[in-house]
Amino acid sequence: MSIPLQLPLFSGRLLTTMAGQSLSKKTEEKYPEIETYDVQYLTKLSDTKELIKSVKDQLHNECRPVQNLFFSECKLGLNDLPNQLYELDWDVILIDGPRGYWPEAPGRTAAIFTSSVLARSKKGGNTKTHVFVHDFNMEVDRVTSDEFLCKENLIKSKEMLGHFDLERMEASSTQFCHNQSNHSSSPRANSSS
Image 1: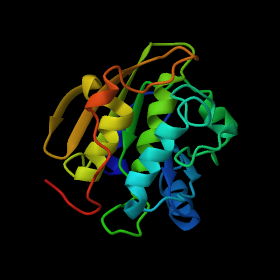
Image 2 (image 1 turned 135 degrees about the horizontal axis):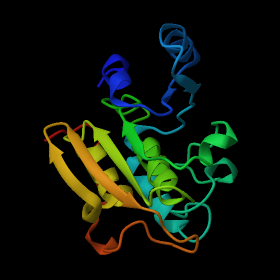
Image 3 (image 1 turned 90 degrees about the vertical axis):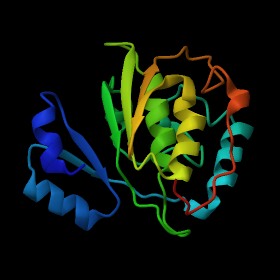
Image 4 (image 1 turned 180 degrees about the vertical axis):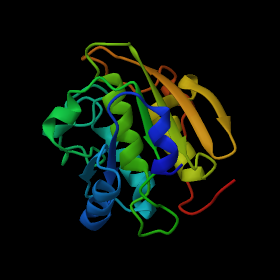
């Protein structure tokens, strides 16, 4: 989904994150009504299995499902955005990047994890956040979504788009999914289905 398609869909505040300053700058110039932020993705698609394991190992500490990621040391937490973005009560999050089709690419594991935490950490407004994952047909995106957005929250998937409805969680929560045992953490790095 491209930015021109997204613009007429929203009447509220629209933010986008981009991998790379030049892309962020071009987007800001072309669409001044959109807040654009540069994000540094430090993950590799080939490390997805290990990254998911590191979150499971740190569920009670740095990788909790409810937290302010600005202060987090979790390997999957995107913590280089302005602090006020972590305080927003998100209604809709669309994950459509970064690219992740080759082993050295960042993949979407960090974006999916971060979106999950943002949705569960909201303090006010509607208790639910709709999270859409583009390229949900890619195995690694589907497996990562199952781990952090959770199968029980999947409303619908069609072709390349998955729609999840996440509820706010208590600050003491230490599991992303109610039925954690059903989740696989063995994606093949570049396969699709």
